[in-house]
Amino acid sequence: MKRSVLFGTLTAIVVLIGLIVVGPQRIALADDSTGDEELAQKLRDNSSRAQNQITAFTLQDGEVTFAGIGADENTEVEIGSVTKTFTTELLRQQVESGDIDLETTVDDIIEVEGSEVSDVTMLELANHTSGLPRLDKDNLGLVRTIFTENPYAGISQDDVFDAARNASLSGRGERSYSNFGAALLGQLLAVNADSEYAELVQENILDPAGMDATYVGSESSIAEDAPRGLAANGRETDAWGMDGYAPAGAIRSTATDMSKYAKFLLDNSEFEFGWFPENSGGYWHNGGTGGYSTMLIIDPNAKEAFYANGNTPQGVEDLTRALRMKGEQ
Image 1 (cartoon, helix red, strand yellow):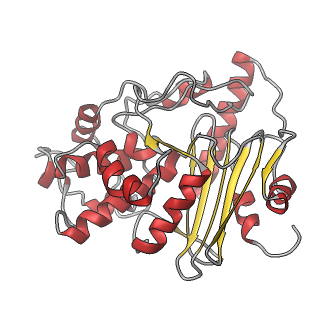
Image 2 (cartoon, rainbow, N blue to C red; image 1 turned 180 degrees about the vertical axis):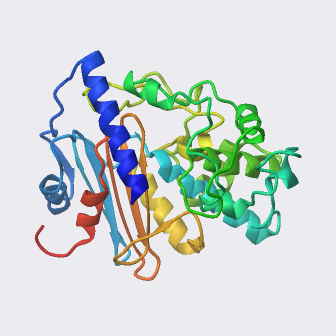
């Protein structure tokens, strides 16, 4: 897809400039394995040179199996844009309860009269068809990421709303992935519930699912000694704490808790929006931050789920799909 090619090109540019500016550090796969030996070996067999630590689970036949390389099922990680599935699950819940409608517009929730986003619907925001750009025009994410910094620092809920009021739409109705749109959706859901985004996630997903080690990583809630990932050049990155953009990618979790999330979704969700169809059945969503990459596949028909997270920007999509395959890899 054109978007994938463009993203890959931009990523390559970031990696190259980062190496030139701050210098490379060697990235190597960790020596120690944890959890199920067979699953850990499958992680090794399908890992790449640009990966260091990996944590994963499979959920099949009602049983969860964990494994890790240099990490285990209780290692805290950033799940990046997999956070967006939490946001769309909150939307599903509010629709189910009658507190909102998929055709509710931005202007129905906040004052944006005269703005291009005024009649953009919740469904358009959830499915990336709103016409909003990937990031608001004032975001310097690319530059900050080169220097291993948090690209979403200093952006508040009000900043997201102000940016939305001034945004121009392009290609509305066509799917174009937008962190900006996801952030706006989550913040609108918070206003609609007279709450904060982190509180909505806690009360409506984390608590019911028993996800005790998971939280929305705001700029102030991530501990100084919390795990950090590695940038493409091997240097440790800043934690990606987010306030305004929290609904797009701020959640920190563990493989243990993500398995609970998968079970929660299999028991409750309908996957009607916010996910991407998986060729072999079910749905997927991935995520990437400056120092982590994540992939979650859920198949509601087979009652299965597969998850992997690595502590570098190297994608784990193929690795996660390999966990689903039977037999030798």
